[in-house]
Length: 623
Image: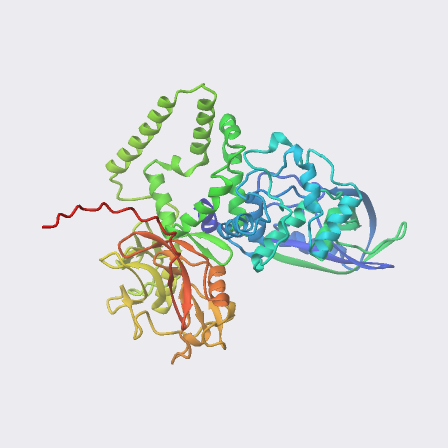
């Protein structure tokens, strides 16, 4: 929520960069002007290469055009050690970045590789090290790979005797209940595509950690034209070291070669240009960056003792962080939009309310830090458990009393301004407050909540601009049943449901330039299935008249359906076992989604048979 507020309140600032194409005998290279006297003054957007004044940029351009420059160059060697072995959080973070897998899905795959296939060690670990007596086992693992590429790299490590008891890998002091994730030595068989990818990640990391560091030659070239410095950076791999294990994947990512120069050679300015840009707001979290933030949440705590208490834990544990993220999505506080995690109107409203109740201690990592600190005190016999529990009860009573006594009519917060005209007066602006979106020029307003669902500012903008939005999910009937509908502006210029002829609004053609195709339709075998705002829909199902029926809602019985599960349904006809569906009676249950004759339905896991209880026999007296 804090990140979203920064994004919404962010005001971009224009800045300028001066780039020059510089020519020498061997060819040309590109340099960028920078301020050699630059010092950070606390401005997060300031950089040595940025100019805030167009006039200054124009002055540098005019001064340096068609001139020559003096070249100075510094070369130095640099090394890069291999990353440490995987713990669960690091594996989830990298799998999200490489394959767009959710943290929960990565945990499921790693758990299957551990329990079902027996090819990985226990995955729910927060350690990136191995016990010191595991050296022999690791050598056996390195001899077990049947994949040709992995086996070649592993054999090289064995042949060169690189597998040694180094503290970077084997360290009892840094092993908690479970050690880092590594292969077990069992040959993988019958793995699906994502299982192969996760196994390959762990196997390559296990091999690479024993390889020598990658070696680079780093070049910093300064070209001074009329006293103005232009900087060019070069980086060449001298010895790939551990990067060889990753082959083409890593070969060129760190290379940036520049043409050589002769002694005392001068450079000609072939071309010079001014690039205009503007500062960017902070990026929204994705699962990878949120996992990192949760793991390192202790760094945000100012108190040294509390920070130390959280240093080994962060928020949540490796085994629970994925569950926390999925819980926020399930409860409607956060939603996935592509790769980003975006706080919803419901989530922002909750944080705004907690701040106005003066209970925002619940929103900070300090509370977790304090509890971790006091739990450690209890573990060492320095604090009585009764005192800790009494403080917990006291905090709970205090929060309940604040909520019970709160009478605030005006709830302050960071609210949106909607870029749309008022449907009543044709003017505006339309501003959000805690409960409504309200015109500032007349008395028109619309409530933020409709049928137990809160509108997002972007949805309101679309409604006011196009007089219709949706279909939208997450509404609830008076009986508490979830439903989906489009919303339109009625004759009174207020929102009302538009169920359309088919019950959820008329079909609209998919804009394929704005939406991602996730695969071929399994029903008609002709159309592509697109990832829309509220559903995965075959393009032929979005025409009038419909030519296909395939459509999977992104939320079924209050449970979000991730993209990878929709793809698995399309490719195999069945998802994984999915928990946390909510029945009409409000009870949670788990089920598979199954494609049957073009329609999506439930398939329930078979329950293990229970032994029948022996019946007590009644004695019968014959007469």
